[in-house]
Image 1 (cartoon, one colour):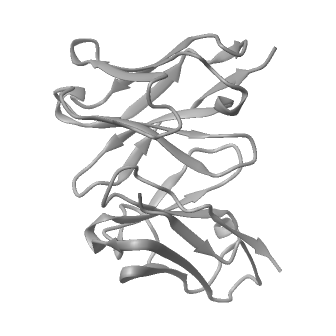
Image 2 (cartoon, rainbow over the protein chains, first blue to last red):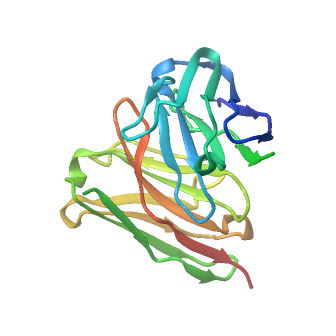
Length: 108
Length: 118
């Protein structure tokens, strides 16, 4: 079973600043099988990135994903007010399709 | 437009059963694998179950295996989750999500709340 660990748990960032979120897998994950989601209170998750680095339809260019093997990163280049939310990574390399525990990006 | 609408949630006593449904529209359900994902109050996302288009490949999270059954009726454009022997820790919003290729969850329903309490 692959365990996904995200860090930090909470990230305090000022609007306009850069945010870097980390996701570590307990075993190697194919880059094709790593996704990132954004979730706001009371809403379903929204796909941001799939295949580790491909932005989903309609996702702004300020969101980017990178990484391979066991280390993956989501970067938000210049935080906008609508980006304050919880972010999750998920692996699809093996069963169960585990999510990380989430990183909350809050206003500093 | 792709739409997924869950229903069937509610309050149930520990040990009880509930059947969730996910109505699909805007696409041909029979062409896609589907998933259930849940989220306990104030907690993170928890993948629950997967079923492929032909219902011959099914996977479960360890926490629900033997108690939950995922199924589908492509003719009715519907996905189901039969939940038996419910526990307090099954209390969550349950989402259905469409599987893409390479796998990711582009489309989600709005969720249905299941509360297990006496």
